[in-house]
Image 1: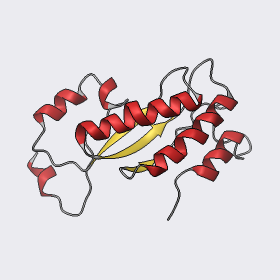
Image 2: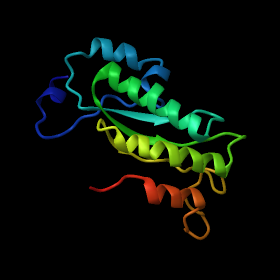
Image 3: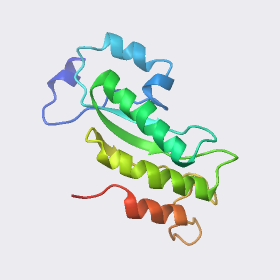
Length: 149
């Protein structure tokens, strides 16, 4: 722990879970015992199965991102997030990104985010694996995601 507390001018993440703190079996326990560990942000991975559209966007921002911030008062980096599941369609993924990206952009404590578009030919893919061209979902993300000010 001494190493973590002595670094200067480097932002450090809390240990990353493969989900988000409330869905992790160990993160809350770690946070209780690591109160003296200096961390600057918390990293999230968010893939709820068979959930998409504006309802998923609302849930992701309020029940995951806002709750994590309110619980730990640390900046949020979302390293991976996406729709996934058998019932997910391209349209529900587009609706998700159209709703979630403006909400993430308006939260000052969300410092970074990046979708994870795994799965060739899946309705949540951001690009076509054969051509390298953006899919309709990828075009929405390119238009609305990660603004540079």
